[in-house]
Length: 100
Figure 1 (cartoon, rainbow, N blue to C red):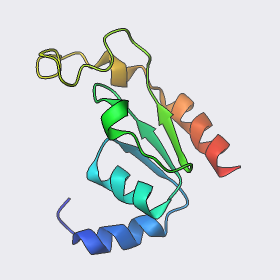
Figure 2: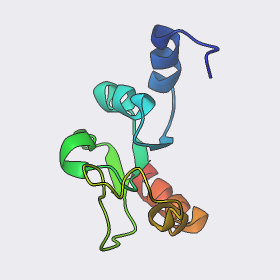
Figure 3: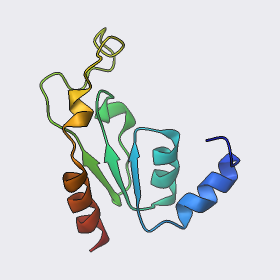
C-alpha cells in the first residue's frame, strides 16, 4: 500500500493474468483495462459498484442481508459472514473457470 503511484498500479494490473479483489479502486482499474478478475462482494451494492467488463466474475454469498450498503447495517455489522462464506476453494474454482 502506498508503494506505487496510481499509474504504476494500473500498469501492474494490466500485466496480470487475473486479479482476485474486493470492491476497491484496483477492481475498477482492472475493469477499465479489461483485466480478468474475480471480484468478491460483501455488503456493497452490485448495482452501484459491480465491474462492467465481460472479463469479471462476481462472487457473493447470497445472504438475505446482502447488500447492506445504504442501510444502517453497513456500518454496524461486525461478523462479515457475507465475506467469510466465500471460501478459498470457491474463489479458486471461479479463477480457474475465468482462465479457461
